[in-house]
Image 1 (cartoon, rainbow, N blue to C red):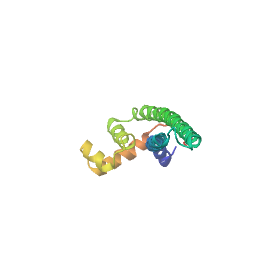
Image 2 (spheres, rainbow, N blue to C red):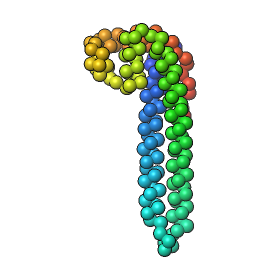
Image 3 (tube, rainbow, N blue to C red):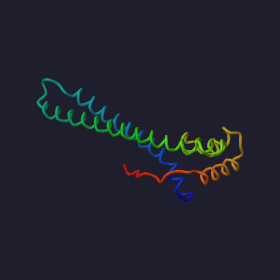
Image 4 (cartoon, rainbow, N blue to C red):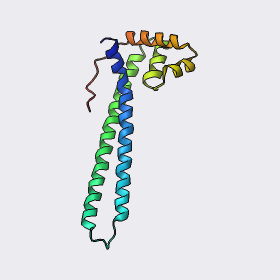
Length: 143
């Protein structure tokens, strides 16, 4: 893998975390919809069948999104394990920089401040760490 491929390999975790956050928003929206439909549901309503059908569909959506979130969380955990296995083989400083950048999602300036290093040194350690990284080919992240 070349340098850019390794960067993409490292970014998989952050991408999965973003997808998890989006799914959580979709679940919350579906739950809100179910709640509002339940509140509209009344025994005297002439539209009970329509509302019941809408509630059923909304509950199915919540279940679908929750299962999708569970699958994604398990995939995120596998990616994190792969990354940690690869990072642990690096020198401590390189490992710290890559962990803070790709797992903790810190900016280069934040890393510089946290490690009490100059930004230039952080960039150097980042490049050196990425180049030394022994990682597997990225899995298909289309899911």
